[in-house]
Picture (cartoon, rainbow, N blue to C red):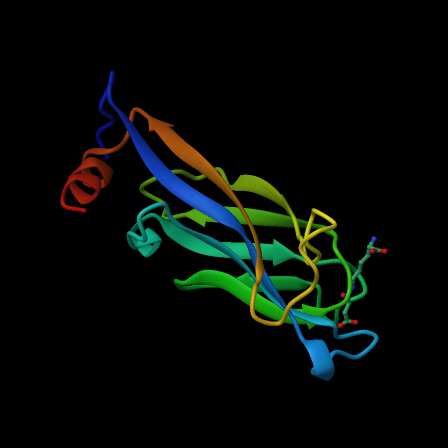
Length: 147
Ligand code: SLL
């Protein structure tokens, strides 16, 4: 379709993880339950823009490449260790053909020594970012504005 010059669309996102320690239910290899996610910064529906998110987990997980084909773009697992998760975002074809790679270091354990592990207080680590699309298609701009 037609491209609009001198226009750009910026999509504010938040990506990161929340992790709960399992306390009495913790075992050696499953001490935490966690969820890694990509969401709109004010919880807007990212399914309008994003077609698929692929979360690449550590090789110690079964089937470490996890594909999420519809929103919410998140993945929950249990485990014991922290590692870097590569998140590949695929957009709808009228938005952008090139996928975007994000990297998030999964965090399970509280940072400061004073906050002891608790089953009630999760560890949350998030990043704010903006995905900027220069010269968007007319169809994309119309969708972004009705959004
Ligand atoms: C570390 N470099 O040594 C990291 C690796 C891997 C964590 C952490 C697997 C859980 C499962 C899991 O939590 N791996 O087996 O399902 O700290």
